[in-house]
Amino acid sequence: MVTLNGNKLTLDEVRKVLLDGERVTFTEESMKKVQESRKAVEKIVAEERIVYGITTGFGKFSDVFIGKEDVEALQLNLIRSHACGVGEPFPEIVSRAMILLRANALLKGFSGVRPVVIEKLIELLNAGIHPVVPQQGSLGASGDLAPLSHLALVLIGEGEVFYKGEKTSAIHALMKEDIFPITLTAKEGLALINGTQAMTAMGVVAYLEAEKLAYQTELIASITIEGLRGIIDAFDEDIQLARGYKEQVEVAERIRAHLSDSLLITKQGEIRVQDAYSIRCIPQVHGATWQTLNYVKEKLEIEMNAATDNPLIFDNGEKVLSGGNFHGQPIAFAMDFLAIAVAELANISERRIERLVNPQLNDLPPFLSPEPGLQSGAMIMQYVAASLVSENKTLAHPASVDSIPSSANQEDHVSMGTIGSRHAYQVITNTRRVLAIEAICAIQAAEIRGKEKMASATRGFLENGRKIVPFISEDRVFSKDIEAMNNWLKVGTFLFDKNLSNTHH
Image (cartoon, rainbow, N blue to C red; front, side, top):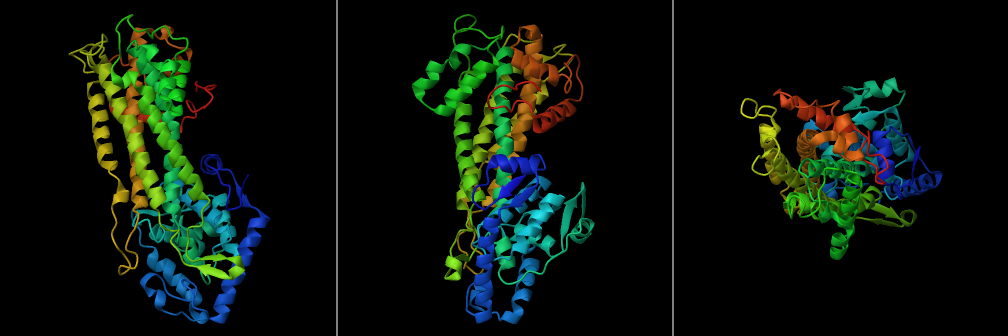
């Protein structure tokens, strides 16, 4: 059970909720803060004080006063009018993350919602009811208004959801689980949609996949080193310590551990004096990606526990302040950095693939073909990797450098962070397929060299990988192999132990 209080949610806890289906609850202390801030909202409405978003319209309509008899209609109109996202829906796991993060933020007690709103969000999580949220339509400031409106629709019994593997109407799924829709009252619609939970949810899912992929790249690269009879001296700890980056030191340490008992690696001068950069510089390049991942993790864990709506209620309602915590700039930068860092893992992987298949760069069969000339082997797999790498270069263009004014120029600078998070996720998806191609080529090369000479860790990967992708003894439709290896990398729990104690499946 993961217990939310608005302040201490970690990525490890998020992983348990998203991937392991862990149930969620909240602390009584946090709910008391929610109740106190709610009293402040009700007092403002009763006294008909002019406070943005509670007794006024929204955005450019902030100077339009709304009487207490219309506060429910105001919230309903807000959710319906703002639910105009377009395009394919976010993956269901991202929708689940949105609910989790929104509930956690509201539990901080700065948003003025009734406890029932949070309770309903947690009921959705625990029942596996996940809103269908279109991916496109957020500017990443004013909050993720369009995406989060699709989430809020479900609470009022409207919109669509993913439920038990199917897309269905929200009201159908709610009734199946005996969850009753609610009527949103003062401030609640705004509190649900005025936040960064779409970009952050997408960012969290992207980060979790990128972290796992980064560990997997190291073992796959280790197999490539064996296939190419690579020089282990470049991974010596003294080299890494001489530069001083902790992440570089750690990558080299893991590579050495993966290859500790390999009979295929060489020493400098034994076959050649130096390897190409795509081999020799793995600690430096992969280490730099880990530096970025650590930065992204730090920003996500702050944002996951942030109050990002507007206005915010402090001192039991004595201070109700309008600000800009909904602006997604910190996450926009983090997502752009994430896309660049993961794209670089694909860049260097594709160069290792080239070294595995190019007969001018190794002493293996050309293109790892069983009958060079008659059979093309892995020739076109390298083309595919090159295509994905090129696509990543366009996706890695920073979204955060753009801004388009909105709401009659009241909202005149926005982050585009949600676009950045979506692009980062696509880069990760592409990169995994590049790594799948490297894995196929690497195990083919290592097996040609003699799998009995491989390190125990890398041989364990090969033996399990051969259940997914057989040895290339003749040409076949390799698209199926690439997708099979890609899916294995995505869902497998192997290669993801930080202590190197579980490198086998």
